[in-house]
Amino acid sequence: MTRGQVLAFRVRGQQLDREAGTPDDTAVLDIGVQDTGPDGGRWALALRGVPTPADDQLATAWTIRGAPHLYRRADLPGVAAATAPFSDADAGKRIYDAAKPLAAAGIGNLEGLDAVAATMRSVVTAPMVKGEVSGRLTELLPEPHLRFCRPCDARHVHEMPFRLAALRAGLELEPGTSPPVLRPVPGLVPADTVPPHLDVVRGYLRLLGPATPKLVAGYLDAPVGDVRARWPEDAVEVAVDGERRWLLAEDAARIGDVPPATGVLLLGPFDLFLQARDRPLLVDDPVRAKALWPVLGRPGAVLADGEVAGTWRPRKTGATLTVAVQLWTPLPREVVTAAAERLAAFRGVVLKDVHID
Image (cartoon, rainbow, N blue to C red):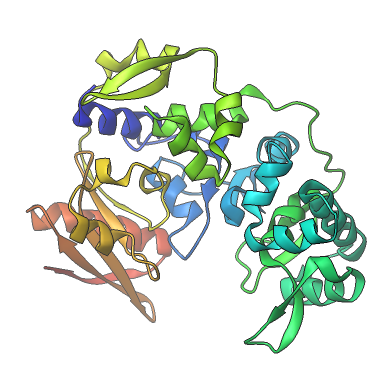
């Protein structure tokens, strides 16, 4: 496969080339749609032909990398199973520095997550703001689960166990709340087995492949060994410009039928297309890559015919929107403006101007 074929495969797999769909047939909801910022999950769905999903069709939960993700509400039991750590070592990697005090106290990482989840379940019986939940957990959990927060000059529960335990506790995030509000999902019990369409390793290969175990592990924040142990039996080897990678067999059989990507879209900063862990394949220029993926304050990406062609940032003033675009590849102003008009319509505001550099 050439680089162009890989990008076209991802555009087609993520349905960035379709005009209309439903949550039920939207592939990215299988792996979760990160819902960070005003142009987050729902904008990502709008770009894939689902501009106005009903509120009761979707649910928001902290899952992969502790970030909020949108899923089909009916899938939540399977999502809870699919996004849980693969092993105790995996749980330790995902909770970062919270693993060290647990180990010192002789508490396993999964045991620690379960303790936080059980306490959260007892505390959150109705919608509660995150800060209030954190305060109650600090009162109820023993020392190994707590850390000193210098900015607050106080002790809190560690952040990543807090986030990763929420779905284990049967809690979702109330959409559109900042600070986040947690609420119980009535009757939520994690599935005993992971439904195949929600398997996160298969999902990465389907939507961001071809890939290696290391790339999938980087996306999940999981150990490579755990990913390799769950590598699909139907994954087949392919070469991407000479590099060894893998695709699911059914996708590899269709790769020659994928047409080149066309059209211009304004991808949100955390769109799945930009979440691939082989960033040099998307943007091989280090300066441009740093502009697209800064440590703080990510811009969105201009996607033109399957290629990242620049960055964009919005500025909302009252009921108007201005979009500042930094192009790396020349594009007709009218196609960029049309993409910005689509964003403004989604936000329910009037496009005031498009600044192109």
